[in-house]
Length: 538
Ligand code: FE
Ligand code: CA
Image 1 (cartoon, rainbow, N blue to C red):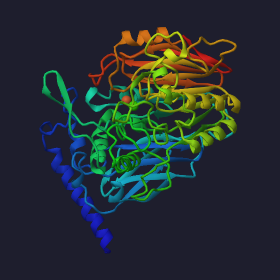
Image 2: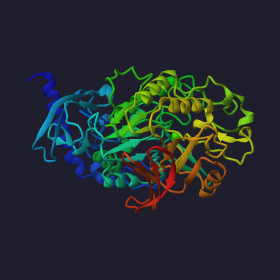
Image 3: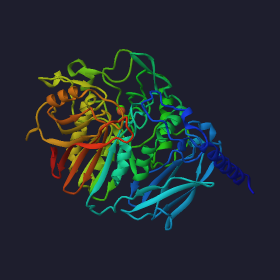
Image 4: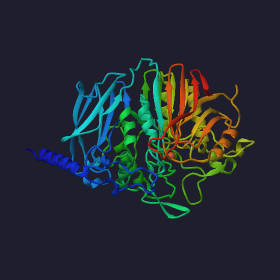
């Protein structure tokens, strides 16, 4: 028996033994939730079962999908997994009993990539559902359900799309993910803040909650993903459908821009590389396999076609953006400013996407055969001034979203219009609120013949992360002509029904984010009709 095989058998035996032991343990002794607002993680997740983080799939093409897992003997102790490469078997089948297996193989889960496994399963049939699972020794993973995209030239009758973002662990349960799984969408788009780098809050003073154990190192970020992905409802949403993903700031650090963080930390680029690596290790991304050390930059902007029905332009508006305009004295990051007090906002050199990504987007729009051109991206694009204004100069904005990059936004709108791409639809996250909006070139004026609606925007609320009181959001809606609806007091997600004739969005709102079994109701629905930009309330 060769040495590699002996190590594998010993490891598999070790994991199986630990699984038996752990089943007898009391799970209540090691809660990782700092606030107590959250249910304890179930005992099964804490066992030595090597697939405790579940499985996932994503990045679907007509003939391929990426399947993912991570071998982890204990989600709360990375050291419990042996630091050796583990051969993980995988299977893809037509049926959930794996009677008709269509592809199988073995992948090496290496410690340098946290024993994560990404398999780009090729040679599949278009527009088909599949089932997949992984095996290590005697252990078998949960079964995931996934699907391929429709054939390139087909016009699918509909696409059922769930849109989610912002799942701060400490602020509630993942009940919304349970509802996403129950909705059985074709595809899930996750638009950033999958983790928050901030650790649990500790109440050290009645008026002041202090954040502890912020993530800085690769080990920190990995354990944060393990904590989040230990949640059964988040796993259920991954097991239900393929995901396409982008990130926002909290996968790395609050309000970072390119190579600069709020603290102006000279070592921020190393921290960012660690965070990017951990993101790759935990997401079903299709990337030419990076080597450890390759994560200083990570290109995650990608295109996905759903036949000729929809093209997803998945953007990254964090990695390449210009530094924030007019940051607080001695710091980086965002602030709230009056436009006339911040001349940098008028600097045409300030980019949001970077030149390469903007050119790539221009090409993707110009060549798009799709009925719907969906910009799946992280931050709100419609202007959302925080105060009433008379002139454009009076506008008070928050500099972190597209409002902080007004000329880059104008450049993007120009590209949308000149490309002739049909039905531009912007999806966004970040602001922890539902918004339905119409984007025009002059956002201080109402839409008109001379100020046409260039794109429709739908923003999903957060899975858990908190937002401002509803009264302030009502004020925003009242003073910003482009914003037709805003709801900041509800957590949940967006469910989109995309058809050749229209896209209908349902704002799915939880009754109580702290209740893992919370009821769900539709807070509002909007329709965007093909050929007529703008959002219409149903
Ligand atoms: Fe967020
Ligand atoms: Ca954010």
